[in-house]
Amino acid sequence: MNEKLRNVPGLERNGSAHPRGTVYVASRLVPDASTVFSPGALAVEDGVVVAAGPLADVEREAPARFDRVDLPGLAILPGLVNAHAHLSIPRLADRDGARALSPPPFVEWILRVVAWKRNASPGEFATNVEAASREAVSNGTTGVGEIAGPDVAAYARCPLRAKVFVEGIGFHPEVAGTVVSSVEEAVARIDAFSRAGGRVAPGISPHTLYTVGFALLQDLARLAARLDLPLALHLAESPAEMEFLASGGGEVATRLYPAVGKDVSSFRGIGGSIPSYLRSAGILREGLILVHNVHLSRGDTDDLRAGGATFVLCPRSNAAHQNGTPDVTHFVDAGIPFALGTDSLGSVSSLSMWEEMRAAAGIYRGGLSGEDLCRSLFRAATENGARVLGLPSGTLAAGAPADFVAIGDPGRGPGGWSFSRMVERVEDGDVRLTVIAGEPEHERP
Ligand SMILES: [Zn+2]
Image 1 (cartoon, rainbow, N blue to C red):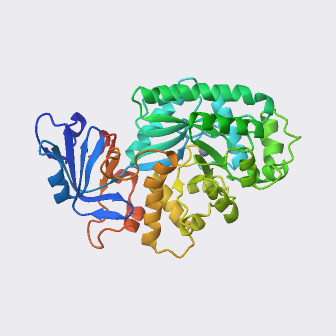
Image 2: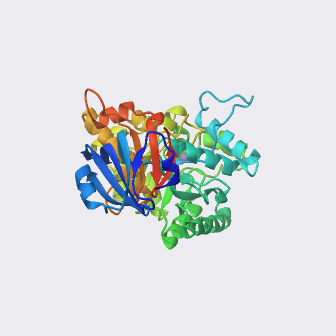
């Protein structure tokens, strides 16, 4: 048994001296958003689930030599997947050094991030990634869609199973070649971490349609196709972005670009719908992950989905920057398999996916029952997140990676288990154990 677990008070154990496998026995097992077993168990060997289901079945299927860890009063769930984060961006202070109580409006905030990035010390990015990863793991997150910061080496020992998207930024066509070369170089470095047994794999992120010009968008799409990598694009996040894409005007043109000393006065907008623009750049295809999607019409959303794109919603970040509200109602009711992401600590107060699920629940206006809505949001925060990112985790079944959490069972007591009770009640502090690839990465007595 893992030495770390041996020391957890309250985790009762008995077993052989040198087991290779472990059976985790809990009062409940929730292997996916459709299934609950009470009591349930999970058998794990070499970082992989070998059996998951009712306790009696798993006891029968798991080899007798397996160790046993009893988790009384806890529920085992798939690890949560935060499909959009920037782990290198810290909680940003105000100009006077005080912690900002709430993030400023969007363009102002972007300028603050630009200034922070310029002035950050070289070691700061790695320190932030380390701290934010630990915070995410402690609240039950096992997978993440990360937009890489400037220091790619920070991801070499990331405890999270992560798709790390290397960001490309450049609006003018003449910079496209240089940007693509540096993106390709960073992708190769992340790929090397993966080959060396790390938990991260690369992706590519054209930052946004207002910071990546058509030429660079095309080039990054070609690079992703050649390397067979997913692409993450911030899209339709703010009213300022939509105004710039429509006409070339607004705050992006009048505040953002002048502040960074760049002239975009010749730009007059993308000249059509977002789906047709993405299509013409060759980027609308399977593997394209669209993040935010606050200001898309339902027709555009459906069109993008038909083109192969997938979606990540970040409702807390959108609210914090007064950017509006993603159309959770349409995504849920139309059965569009969206994922959820927190965005960075510069925008939101925590990397809690529990809070993100609650924020999404709070803006749903459709006709589903609370229980069906919460199943849908739990699926978004687990299975869909993994699928969108191309991670093999997200559900607990034989053959899946042993990425799971044990939480204080929200179904204890009168009322019993329900997905809505879980989404409503679970706090970060209820996460008692987080296991990634079979390794306990967080324990809370
Ligand atoms: Zn973002």
